[in-house]
Amino acid sequence: MNALIKLLTRFLFLTAVLMLGGIFPSYAAELQKLTNAKLINNSANDGDSFFVEAAGKSFHVRLYFVDCPETSVGFKSDARRVREQMRYFGLPSAERTIHFGNEAKTFSESILAKPFTVHTAFASALGRSAKGRIYGFITTADGNDLAILLVKNGLARTYGMGRETPDEISRDEMIEKLRDLETSAMLKRIGIWSESNPDQIVELRAKQRSEERELQELQNQVKKAKSPQGLLDLNTATEKELQSIKGIVPVLAERIIAGRPYKTVDDLLKVKGIGSKKLEKIRPYVVVDAGKE
Image 1 (cartoon, rainbow, N blue to C red):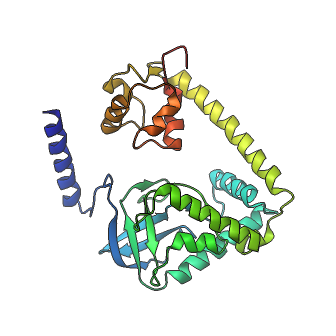
Image 2: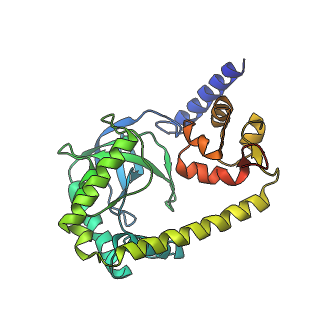
Image 3: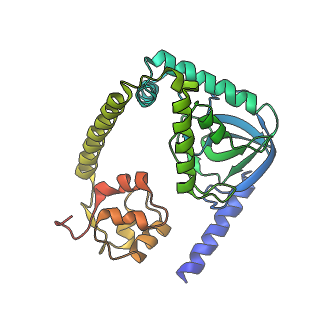
C-alpha cells in the first residue's frame, strides 16, 4: 500500500510540473538529451556555467566535474572562492586568477558558437542564479565533451559534482581521466598552469585544507548544538527520525535502514545517493551505537 501511495504521489507531482511548463522533473535519474542547443549571451556566463536555449526553453547549465576560475568578485563568497582557486593553481594573485577565469569564459563561448547538445537530469546546481542552475554535460558540435576540453587546455580543474556520463563512463573513471588530463596540462604548463608557482603550490594547498578543516569543525559543533533530537543511531533510528535530518528524503531514509547494520558512520558511503559531501552534512547528526562512535 505504501509503495502504491508513493507511486501515485510521484505521478501527481510529475503531472503538476508538466502543467506548470516544466519539461522534466528535477528528480529524474536518467539523462535527457537536448539537441541543437544554443548559447545565450548573459553577463553571468563563465567558463563552466552558462545560459543556453534548448527545446524552446532557457536553462542555466553548470558543467559536471570541473571548475573554472571566477570571472569577477562581487561578494565575500566570491573573494573566498577566488582565494581558494588561486591557492589550488598556485597563482601569484587574485587578479591573475580572474584573468584566467575570463580566458576560460572566452574559450567556452568560442566552442559553443555552434549548436551543441546538452545532457541533463535537471539536478539542481547551487548558485546565485535567480532561476536556479542545473548540472549537465555539453557535447560540442565536433562531438567533444566541453569539460574535458577545458581541463585539457589548462583552463579548469577536476572538481565538483559528477555522475555517469552520456557515454556510460562511470563517475570514478571520469574523475581519473580528468585528473590525468589535468596533470598533463600542468606538466605542459599551458593555460592557467603557465603561471603556477611550483615552489609554493604545496604550501598554498595545505593552508587551504587546514582552513577548510577548521571551518568544518566549527560548523559541525554548531550543528550538533542546534540538533533538536540529539544524535541518531544509524542502526536504530526510525524512518521518520532519519527524515528529520535535512537532506534525507524518504527514499534515502529507506535505503539507510535497508543497509543496516553499520559499523561506522562512514559506512553510509555504501548507500546509493550518499557521497562524501552529503555524508559530511549528515555526520553531525548521527552515530553508530550511541556513545561508542
